[in-house]
Length: 398
Image (tube, rainbow, N blue to C red):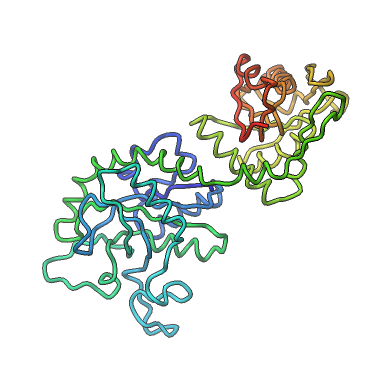
């Protein structure tokens, strides 16, 4: 589960925790087009498969009060009307989307949101509700009638239906959850109430990182990875228990899920870290590292065994569980301003990764982070790396 937040305006997002910035789209602006632009950023650039719309809304139903948290059960447009085109039945009808006016959101995600939000905000009324969306700030005057979509809705915002519609049309199985805090009653005092509520809302936004972490505990990526790893005793030499992870590479869906999961975990553990290149250690670090480089959107550099690279070479030797070896890199592959993330499949003793860091340093670049699928219990590789100033990110312990 790769979770990204669409937070419509800078006013609503000003205290979203910094560690969420790599999966948060804020400041695109209010309204349908801006929100869909933010969702596209999350999906196509930040690799999210779950979009959470977080922000303020106006209450429409009599039993919806200011301070309530509404998790969207259904969405619809309150201002979309193409009558009499395409057999439209009028306001709120959208071909292949809301022909019955209201589009139902994913029940499993809604249940997770309700459960975790009630834990985070025990003093608030957290409930499900129908949300309608339109490109107008709603300030109903006394006696103004509600249209047929508004009559069936509990709250009104300017983005949710459009983002759900956009993701629905992509056909990429992107789930959307809507979380709205009621700031006003969508009446003639709405503008005043909305502005006054922002400080209160800011305190609530600070807890979104906790919500995201709680939801990710439901992710089964690690279980899927572990199910395809096989143990081979006395390979390649007697006394060594070899962890064969090739099964991960045999299934593109599992490999992609692993890349996204470790990408996300890296950013959560290292908020604000800048990465300009990925360096993969021969041999399985090549495959995993190249996929990780695509996920990060940065160049990939191979670190090879001795004698495999032409040109000016920088090298360093190291010892593994069962052999001594040498890693090399082409000096021209790195520049002094590079921030390099080292990638290997499994962290064992840490010797090869430490040698790789030394090679990168000899090329003049900086390397303080490494990333792997897992680490071998009892071999203490991550502690060795930590002693030399390298933080390690990995998914599981074998």
